[in-house]
Image 1 (cartoon, rainbow, N blue to C red):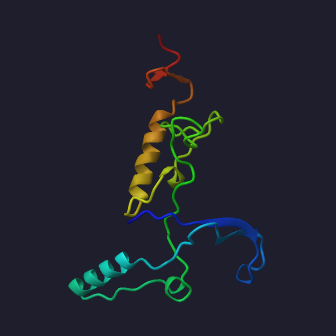
Image 2 (image 1 turned 135 degrees about the vertical axis):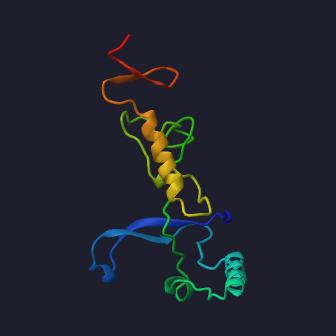
Image 3 (image 1 turned 90 degrees about the vertical axis):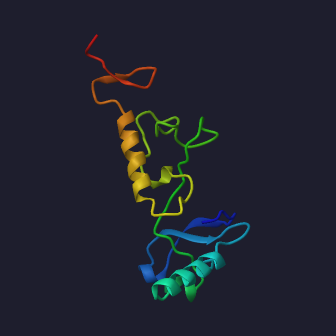
Length: 150
């Protein structure tokens, strides 16, 4: 994996293939537009294919139309120390919205380079452990304390 500054913009649009329903679509943004071709990835796939007797392949949308495809949608609600630095805090709470938590792939700030399912599960489990059960109050140290006991 590598980090590149590439840009897409979201807009409402209609496509014949989708029955002309209004939906979010992507259009090129200001700056470099994402491409499907990554020379490093192609070279690696070819080396692995030679070793295992396989055949490296890509999706038709990537090879024919040059449209990059990923099944792992991540980011959008990054963690930060304050609202200027992120959408959520280290306890997965959305800044400015009491009781609203983000516990999915949008809390993962960057592509980890592998299937992110276990990372997302671990973050979700951690987030759930930080939410006090009903009838409890969280102490200043971050521990869950039963409000009914002294």
